[in-house]
Image (cartoon, rainbow, N blue to C red; front, side, top):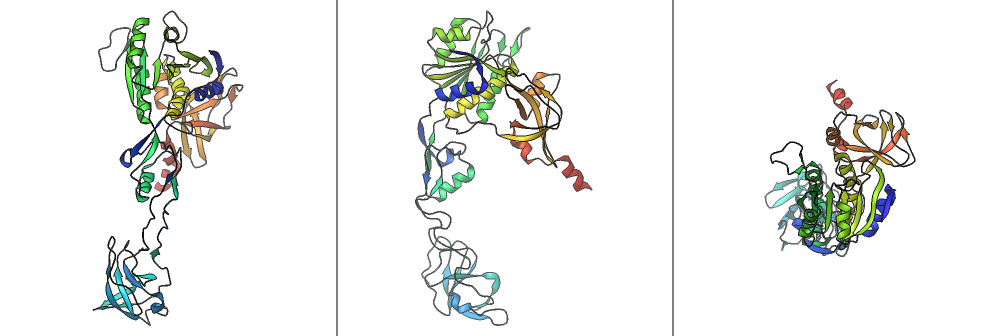
Length: 419
């Protein structure tokens, strides 16, 4: 098992040991948020016929070549066409068919004159504008052609993509299976949220936040509690070993007499890949395989627990769900105040990203409460190993944890509108 490795190496080792998941066919109503396991080809043309883009009259364009308000042209109405029903009436010289949006273009017609340029006159319609060939006609297959690839493997399905697949004649798609996780709290001091809190105990906030993140990414999870006894920890693992695809434990990995997690896993025959990573916070993180299933051991301190989860465990779990990229996008922002790291490891710093008239700015959070700092951040400043500081006004890359800031208006925007 590798010891005290670099952060980048830890991610590489994690991804290299996690196999691509199995696949399953999911109907359209369950596809949003899932990752496609194969390219998706359309089964039908859309529209399936040449269709009208307007309410109006299907015409032969030659009849209206010189039509305008001063020289209107009267056409006999031969019938009507509505969406979903093919009209029996055709269009010939001097005749027209009343048509609604989405209806199939009748035989003989090559254009549609919008209703706003017409006036009814009994069994005829007076046309006051030209309509060149193709006017207001959506040709068959303009939006989608049968056999066309409408979505690619590894794309995450959006609601709009679900609508596109329905239009393309599909009732579902092959996607990567979603892993099921067991999130395990260790330590005699941990109490489930909502229960009475005896003196010296603490609520299981670590695993509560982890489960919330997993829910955010639609990863189902089960919670297990184990004390400081090896037998209790072994029992908790064995209870879920056949029911889940991945384990995430919280606490018990640093090295004190109560840190038994690694020893327990070794007794169960796990394949330890690495233990301790040069990252701060989160150094004590460990990763390995138990019966072929990924097992992430996270430190117990809240900042370390959260960072090890966000930077190591969550990317690995999302790969198990077929995600082709890391969960948190990066963008450039101007630093408001100086920050310091440590050349010996990758440092992650809680930060607030804001959008102003001149772009994005980022401020490191320096709150008295580490837990409030964790809750208030929307971004992370990353100081890579080998670099110890950034100065104010430098532009650097930050990890974006919350996309809301991308759509917020700056205070200057609202102040300007008031003025």
